[in-house]
Image (cartoon, rainbow, N blue to C red; front, top):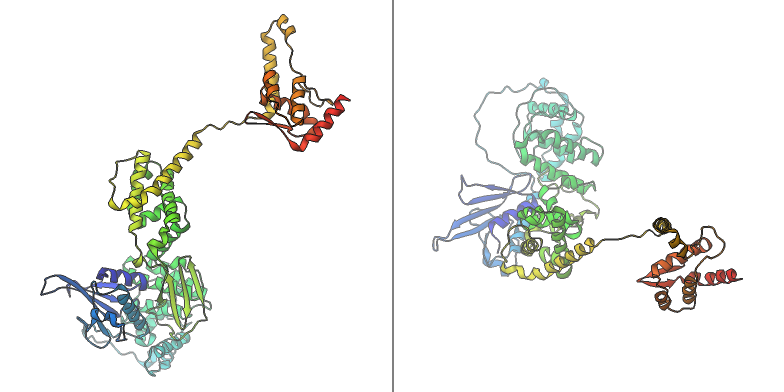
Length: 582
């Protein structure tokens, strides 16, 4: 079931529409307006049923009377508050599917983008005497501009054509007169300005082009932005986009009270960049960018990015959990591993976010541009989760819709993981288990078991033996032994011969030669080692040192207290031993 709050969020996220709450004038009413033009496309109504005294929700959508499926006739009817042909009444409830409301709202937005202007009723102003400028006081270029205007059929295209021809005529014109005000109307053009206001606009534009951004009426701002969107001001699309960026930073950044006007400009900048295949990410709506970054993090992010995404979708308090507070790197790794494991085993991402949806997209909605302009079949990939394509004269957006996401599994995962990780790490107070936590416990326990194994393996000491230093150690031990023995004891001591570096023969004692011969014969020398009280590792060191200069490599290794002959040198050893005996 779709509620009015869901309709408002859907319009804001999908169409960048504005929601106006009319509580002071009409209690229980709110209005959705098209971006840029401000045209009403839906009226949302909250009222009490006089029969049951229950609060009911309904809306009127300005989408015409195009036929709908018969199955939806129960929730559709005459408008509840508005009057006239384009409005259709929708009664929200269990018998009204969300897809019906979205379809009607999409149609209303599409029709609003095709309208040339909106008639706005304003309170009559007090009459003041204003001298009519004499013809000779109006510059020739200004008079020439007004003469371009042609009423024609009054269509939106004719409205744009008049503006574009006037803009070409005045693209390099500058003036230097003061300005104070101008009429505030939708889709303003030069023809809507009085000669005094027109001169004021071109004076203000000259300062803007020189890097100065004095305060000006919204009409001046919009005309300047329309010029850039139509390629007036620079010879390239990149240049026009750069001028819009400078205006955004130079004018709006120091005027936070004009936030709505800035949001509209940034929407146009983003659409303009996509339409001309320019980098558009810097101008993307902040909330949409955060949503896309969250999806990218869950798809292929590092530990920190995944943890931030889980907090954004689940609960921001996750970032304050004792699991993370007690060790940021360790805590974020555990939460990220829990998501990765559950996503791999349970396909959690498609379960939560479904599939990308296609919807109409109006990149320059509310701007005075050529609606008849066509593009080749173009596609624009903003990121892995959002793309745009131009088909059959319409722009189509393909993206994951936040309104369709089921975030309950992510909230359940975050709570279950926080509870079990607190118990595992003994951090913070214990959390109670919720009814919907059970499905995630087995995967989280596997993450804990794996982390425990990794910590145990990392705690074991790693001993590295440098074989190159064994000769020095043996020599030092002999010197220490000799200094401790008496002369009579030294005479009784016999040491196993150790080959000297650079000797031409193989100086090995008989037990070592017997062990080597046994290995060459492919037999186990274990009994020989026990009889002569020799350690395999020591025998390997003595044999390798004896043959190092003649072979240049290790010939015998000790693996798990067993001697292993290197097969590559078997024949070389036999040849060396035969030559030594000869």
